[in-house]
Amino acid sequence: MKHELPKLQYSPNALAEVLSEKTMEFHYGKHHQAYVNNLNSLIQGTKFENASLEQIIMEAEGGVFNNGAQVWNHSFYFEAFSPAPKHMPEGDLLKAIEVSFGSFEEFLSKFSNAAATLFGSGWAWLVVDADGKLIITQESNAGNPLRKGLKPLLTCDVWEHAYYLDYQNRRPDYIQAFWKIVDWRVVEKRFEQAR
Amino acid sequence: MAFQLPKLKFDYKALEPYIDEMTMDIHYNKHHGTYTNNLNNAIAGTSIEALPIEEILQEVSKLSPAVRNNGGGYFNHNLFWDIMSPNGGGKPDGALLKSIKKFFGSFDEFKEKFSNAAATRFGSGWAWLVWTGKDFQVFSTPNQDNSLMDVADIKGIPILGLDVWEHAYYLKYQNRRSEYIQNFWNVIDWKAVEEKYIAATSK
Ligand SMILES: [Fe+2]
Ligand SMILES: [Fe+2]
Image (cartoon, rainbow over all chains, first blue to last red; front, side, top):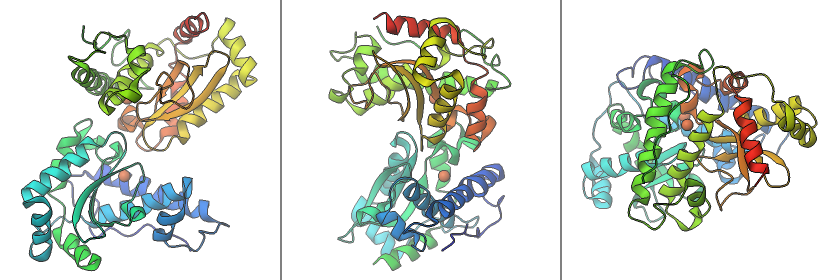
């Protein structure tokens, strides 16, 4: 199965207030595309040739895992953004966030802190655990929570390439701006499907 | 006494066009500066406060992740600035070249091996030439780890190091890490590397 770069739901300059067109051009157009290309060439003639990305994330190691998980992670990351986002969750998701973190504000601060303190390259995640509880996790490099039986709802890429052209060393500024483009409609939909 | 950000022996634009002025400024002042401050905060008031950085790194397994990460970041960047110069490039000579030939066959083979270690490190990290006490090894480490740490797979004294965190090259090279690695060879100060080699082998 040939993996493909998913189309963006918005134009490359649509998020410019937070992520510049140049960042989108490299992050989506070069990094994400390279993970897709690398994966396609690495799986040729292996048992992962016809595997889904989820299977690859669960079972693969080394370069196949790294590139496969990075394809999934980036698709999941870009898919949650909108130039006209819903700024706060409501309904069941909001309730679940309040049960797990106390309040939406508390959640924002805990997730932001997880993203800010991950050392090196990686991802911060909001996930549903096996008991249906929401938790925040960190993964290094290409790490993906599916591998631990967790269901991802939202992720923030804190590889330096995600923010360096726009924010340089100021990762906390990037994380703060990230919340302006997260579309909670998308996260609500994921939460519904995860239950 | 707290650790100090060392003085650079060249100015921010001295390594142009290979490493740009803005990258040097941010990399040195912000990234290296933050590692230095965070290291000082992590060891303030503890029993290791007065130890040299090399000795702190030797026991990071017993210390907090903050010491491993920031102590590594402090040492690695010190070394990195030290082995670059606007008058760099070319090849080593003398005892260092002889030793490189002995363990890698030729300078070009060494160069290829080192560049490959730098290119294939997934995520953030460093490529190294290390004197183990009996031979040279080329490899990479994740994040700010290095071969002085007791947690290292390969232990020894770093002679040459290349930062492949994206912050080291993203403003100028973006996703083209291999171009950055190629250009690094134009700014290596082989005199400084040789000094490190002589100090390491005479221990
Ligand atoms: Fe990314
Ligand atoms: Fe660095």
